[in-house]
Structure formats: C-alpha cells, structure tokens
Amino acid sequence: MGRFCDPLVYERAPALESATRIPFNPPIHPMKALLAPLFLSLAMASTVFAAWPINDICPVDGKNARPIYRVKTAEGFVAFCCVSCLQAFERAPGKYSVKKKEMAK
Image (cartoon, rainbow, N blue to C red; front, side, top):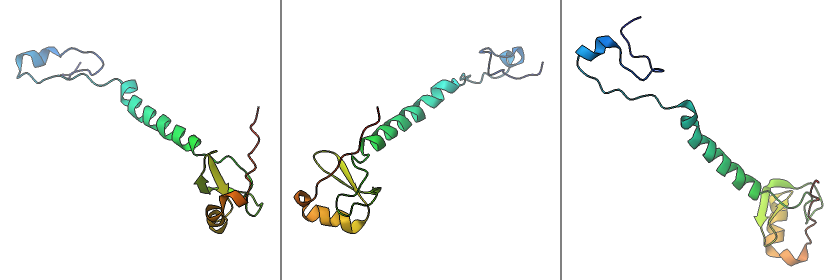
C-alpha cells in the first residue's frame, strides 16, 4: 500500500491525517456525468424527427423528395426535390397537392 487516497474508497490514507489537510472531493459517479449529454441528445433527436417531412414525392415535379429542401405548412413539413420546386411551391402553395407518405404499421 502506498501513500495515496483511493478514489473508490471514500476515506483518507493514514499518512495524510498528520500532514496538512487537503480537502477531499469524492469523484462524480460516471452515470451522473453522462446524464446531461444523454438528455441533450434526446432533446435534439426529438426536434429532428418532429421536422421530418410528410411526403416522399416532390409535389411540383413528381421526383423523389429530399428532406434538405423543405418548407413548413399547416400539415407539417413538405419536402421538395430541388430549390426551384421549393420556390415554386412558396409562390403558389394552393396550386400543388401534397401526397402524404404511408406510415408503417
């Protein structure tokens, strides 16, 4: 046994009792250290899924929609295949019908 303070046992080594007292702070439990990043990642994941588009097909061109090109509507986020389709939809949203994707059961 050396002259050290074991971090897993919350007691001082006998050699330190006679020396100058150093304040001893027990280490933080590893699970407590992981709680804040865990809650932050869960909050970020919920916002990502809340912003997921309601369609798979571009309402303007009929091509596959890309989630990066999206606009928020009353029904949810609508995705488009390109920027020009997004701009065309924003100019006249009533002109295009959005086909919602089927939800998996």
